[in-house]
Image (cartoon, rainbow, N blue to C red):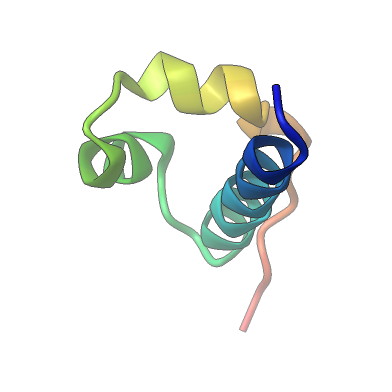
Length: 54
């Protein structure tokens, strides 16, 4: 993997983390990315993410 691909994957992971913290479900994120929701959960295990309470 090239450095630019790694950086793009890192950014994608951080954006997914932010969406999860804001309350989006892995199913919603997967729908937007057109992947299976299990792919999102493999990338960032949702049980370990604490949501931001407003």
